Image 1 (tube, one colour):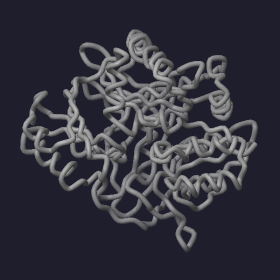
Image 2: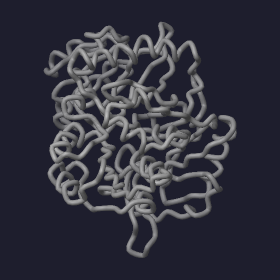
Image 3: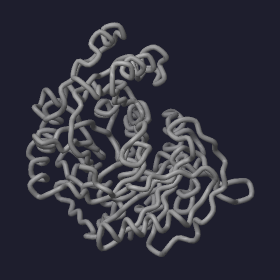
Image 4: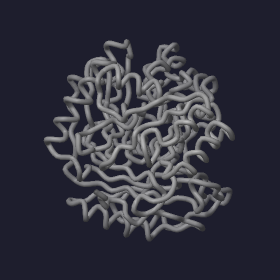
Length: 420
């Protein structure tokens, strides 16, 4: 069996790594991949966001299944194009991908189906938005409506910060067309958590919980990033909370898909705020979170390939999915300056010195001309460890972070700490 994976980040490395452990021993091909993925898959050079190019690669490779990792090719309709070739795809089609590609689309879906979320308003005119500064109080949550690589959300602490964010999004257009509409939301108070779900026409199946750390600095300070680390399972989850999430969020979401004609097949990532009133949805994403995938997939016992195939055949309802009782912690090692400007091409050392059982997922790496591995992105590596306890996994992850180095390296020191 041949599997074509689309993407070249930490999420795709985690997927490729897990698929490489399948008893079916699939042939793995990845577009474009990275230096870590190349250790388990054959990499084909192409831009993952170039729908036409990736479709042609799929035609030439003739895989048994295609797994699409990143959000942009999903939003651009890559699933639709590859399925037109008769190749099964794990990843939602263009219509379903609007759940991530448009904040306003998702907010309307949540409202329509009675799913708890923050109050909100939409704006396409900067003047109108400026006149409503502080409408829900502060911090004022401003979200670029379209895709912005996980960086299109600003929590303005006062009117001056809000006006600056409006200028950046709608004036300077730092997020391009994503800022043509801005969604302003009530700022929810509580603890953030993530639930990733496998979804097809037969079922929505939650994976084990995870907690992400979006801010660049310790104690959740500084600007948002694509994610500086995760752990699984989330320490804030209880059986009672899980029951509420199922009844108040998962079930009405799945029923909403049916009512709205959304034929979703893939991963639905649900970002939650656990408030005093209960769980509320912050966002939907259409794919494995990154770096949530690194900690969650470390704990998956079931063959991931079986799950992917079952989802493309609408058989998830009958697919057994089991998880390890071990805890997992993933610490992201980033380039200095991220999420702002940063330098690439720094040599990475220590990758071969990690403890047995610790996996270093590559997010932004490439092979240098001399054979070494170089930095090639803002988030570079995700050092992921497991342990019998949360504390053991956390200690092991940080012990191994110390073994790796590259010029300008930066990481948070509090991944796994819960701030209530």
